[in-house]
Image 1 (cartoon, rainbow, N blue to C red):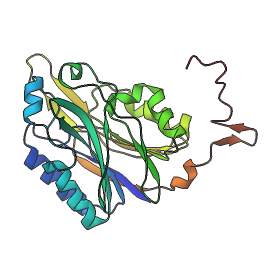
Image 2: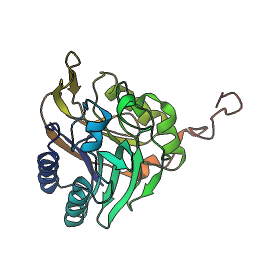
Image 3: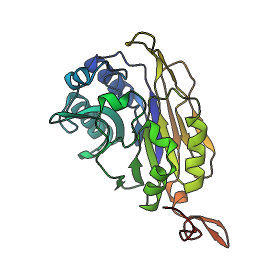
Image 4: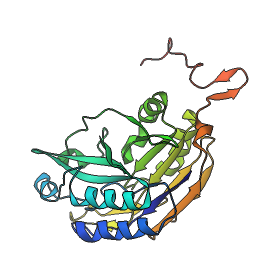
Amino acid sequence: MKVGFIQTLPVFGDILANVDKAVARLSSLDAELVVLPELFSTGYQFRSKEEAMSLAEDAKVGYAAASLIEVAKKKKMFIAAGINEKVKRKVFNSSILVGPKGFIGVYRKAHLFWNEKKIFSPGDTPFEVYDIGKAKVGMMICFDWVFPEAARTLALKGAEVILHPSNLVLPYCPQAMITRSLENRIFSITANRVGTEERIKGKELKFIGTSQVTAFNGEVLCRAGRRKPEAGVVEIDPKKARTKDITPLNNLFKDRRKDLFLL
């Protein structure tokens, strides 16, 4: 299965341009499953909840969703992408999954990072797993990486590939996702952005790029640079994530000492 990421440089607030650029890049890729960054259509640093609300869209029929569904149908492709989702009077930092048959699901970020807590409502969706034919996939968003329970929950539910839209500013995540993949024996696709935003004076954010695809054994199959928009595509075998045997006598999930764990 050919999987990949698109590492973007969005212009804050320009939904039409950001989405159209992503669609053009998607149209040029030879891939079956692609991940776009967190908040790929709007940019990241909102000044207020009201500003976020003014740029928020419906997860199923907004411009971002409709455009991604259209290209997914044309390319027979599955796409995960981070959006600014409006639900009545709330805004969520969300990721949608679409495919050749249209909208599949939405995940709302469980672990909000820093000033996101002033803008977004905490996610109210479970960590769901979706069967897309060649693989079973689940979604996390950015800061979820620091909570091992997120990836473990998806893995225990049968996920073989984690789709991880991100806007990373901390340097640790790319290496940490190697551990998330290794400790669950699953593949992961982290799509990050590049560039800087300083829409709040004195609070410049520098995004670290370094999008990557990581294998079940911890191998980094493809990694982007830190400064430029780019795409990466590699071929994986999701079936390799289905066995949790480490040695003939050790199984990653069966050996868990739940009698000794706090949770």
